[in-house]
Amino acid sequence: MTTHYDAIVIGASVNGLAAAALLARAGAQVLLLERELAPREAPGALYALDPALVDALDLTRFGLRFKARDLPLTGIGDGAPPLRLGRNAQATARGLAGASDAKAWMPFHREMFALARRLRRWWWHAHQDGRPEDMLDGKAREMFNRLAYTGADAFLAARFESEILRALLLFDAVAGGFSPSEPGSALALVWRGAQEMAGLQGAAALPACGSLTAALTRAGNGADLRMTAPVANIPMRDGEARGVVLADGSEIAGRVVLSAISGLATESLLGDPLQEAARTGEVQLVLRTRAMPPLPEPFAGGRAVIADTPGLYADAYEAARAGNLPRDLPLECVAGCDELIVTARPVPVSPREGWEALKPLLAARVIKRINCRVPGFARAVTGVEFRLPGPHPRPGLAQLLAPPAARLKTRLPNLYLCGHDAEPVPSVSGRAGRMAAALAVRALNGAAH
Image (cartoon, rainbow, N blue to C red; front, top):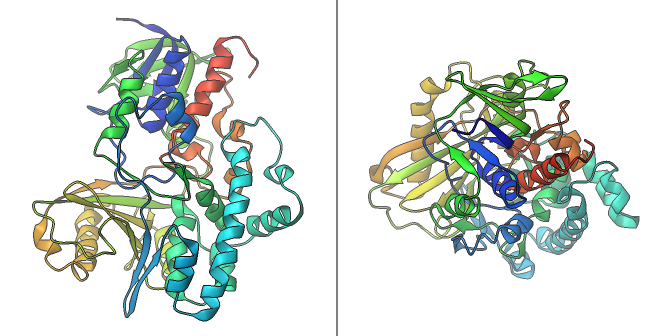
């Protein structure tokens, strides 16, 4: 068994698989370590998968397929008809109830998407230094500076009267643990608008079951993949990472190490956690069904967000930050393969009562809320799989403004971060894996840190 590699990648997530594949294609001898029995597919809709990664690894040739490429976003509340936001901004404006909101939607959509496209150069490439506003001028820079120091709830309240519209848009603004009122959460909406799926700006897409992980695995078949191999620590010598030590005590040397687990988990492997941990995050429930009842349109073929008012987010955030499970949570529902994937945010990362005690309560609340809108759904559920929030650095404005390379580099010149929290907003992207792999290739070729 080989005990020395050019590069060791910790974690077979989308980022880890991407980094391993790109390093192997660059000629490096790569070992990818995963603690589970197999790489796990990210459930639900994708909205940030890196187009440059899809092209670089030719993932469509290796089997990446989409069941739906442009999922509409629908808001569902009590006592109001569903509100659908689609690709056509004019059609969306016509569907808004209030005349003022209909008039405001077109300039809002146009300005946010235009600013988002200009900021792609900052968020999609591994700049070593600089500031995002240096890429902007005139009104675009003014808008950026205003959004960077504005909470999403205040920004949306100044634009729109409809509570269900604001509640719908806030779901993306609080991704990763943002408070709806904190500076930077408005800019998170711009980051969301900068993403592209299947060539469509701001789209969400549903991959065919298992096709993303399978395509990345096939694309990276030049790397060694070792499953059920948890890493115990990252040894250091002379100010550099020397490889990894596995839980069974075996040592594997590596010239560079890339960590696709969270930044906090990586620091714990070094024995020196430094960052402030986020108190809030999100949880996903995969609700398996034996025979899915007919889904009404808001749930069929789209993203359905159940949230009545913008105040729901503030109340839930305060409860989650205190370590309690909020009584009422914003939910996103996406229909998959004989399953419904539900994302609930915000929730406590480390609840007072512990997640094992709260799982049945949360599942019961979620299933009850969906059953009110999809009669017969509760009887059809045969099992629930939880994807719980793990320890991760607290998101914030600094993460959105930081030079991309600064999110990937560590205090060790040959250790790079490429977990989901190395993105400006935690997400399933692969972009951090692509950029970290490029930095690692430079290091292997002798370039300075």
